[in-house]
Amino acid sequence: MDSQYVNVFIEGKVSFNNRSLHAIGDTPNPYEKAISIIGKTLAPFDEDNLIPCFGFGDATTHDTEVFSFHNDHSSCHGFEEVLACYRKIVPNLRLAGPTSYAPVIDVAVDIVENSGGQFHVLVIIADGQVTRSVNTSDRELSPQEESTINSIVNASLYPLSIVLVGVGDGPWDDMKKFDDKIPAREFDNFQFVNFTGIMSKNISPKEKETAFALAALMEIPLQYKAVIELDILGLHAQYALRIQRTWPLIAGIRLAGNVGQKCRIVQYAAKGLLIVLGCLLDFHIYVQLSKC
Image (cartoon, rainbow, N blue to C red; front, top):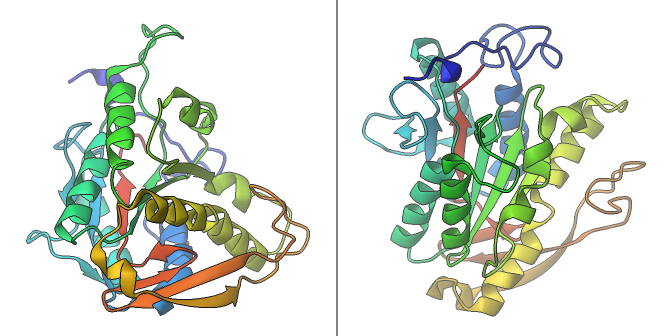
């Protein structure tokens, strides 16, 4: 294995007091914080409370596979179990690279297919960009970039939204512009959210949590609308019940548009389908375990 991909970097030098982003202790690490905030936002609306959880970026998976949080590949029961499994798994892993999001996206597509085409949200929490070699020119794509882009394009044929949450020091320049590298898709199914950038704002902790939750989920209603218009949603959608709701105001924060204005939220509910912010809460958590 190329030594450049071995765990030799501390991606929390600035953002996590020179500690590993996966450090387990009395203070929640950035991964735990991100999972907790997403959980508090979405868990109350989850009917079955089952969350498929996987990891990638260890010495056994690298950029080609993922591993389940449970040996029998079962889902976690709620976000408390997600966090408990994460804390149990991390100390026993040998972290490694390179980084590709293709394997996790492909697994999510399989889950969507097996669900009968229900709308899902894939949340990827990662501390590193897709790997680019120093030998890759500006006009070229690295193998990891190419595989990730191909998987994103393929995923746009399915009712799946992809949210990449960036934790740690970055840099995140490539991911902020990653959409520009992706060719025509059926719909814009990918978004990047800079967790560290939001958490470093000079606002209260509660405002930070709300801002992150909104930034991570605010594009999903439009993505769900696109899925409906493309007619790629499963049959359950035809029984949906539409209810108007309002997302809380966040004063003085501007994220992905003017969120100082009220955002109209449509909640769809039917048997096997519960959507808030346009998002089916049968979503997945993937945690990158490399380079930290």
